[in-house]
Amino acid sequence: MAQTCHEWRGLTILSHDPSGELEELIDRMPRELTSLILELANIAKALAPEHARSTYGEPSAGLTPWDIYGRDDAERALAMARRAVDMMNTILKSLGINVTDP
Image 1 (cartoon, rainbow, N blue to C red):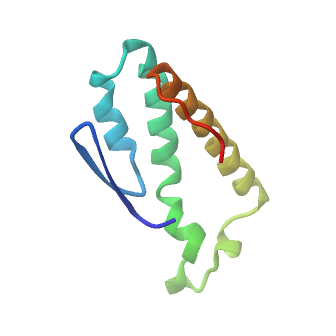
Image 2: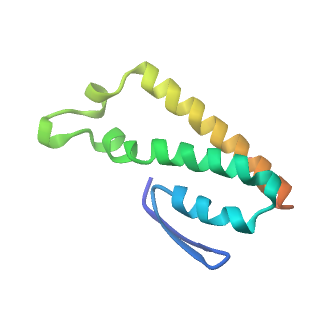
């Protein structure tokens, strides 16, 4: 996944870790979404640092991603990603934004 740049409601987002931008949105969102947005930010914060390691490994140490991560790591990351998608859909629906599966 490439680094992305988005502008939304006056915020410019350029990162693999959107947790800070999500936290900044809390004051602009309905109060009932606060816990979902915080949980989504926490998932992003947990998974973002692993992006480069899961893509490139640790070349300086001679480690590939397969040396660093195992099945349990993949299952945990996948469960977190699925939870993030569910939360994102809930948040967007609450804001009146319809998202359809591709």
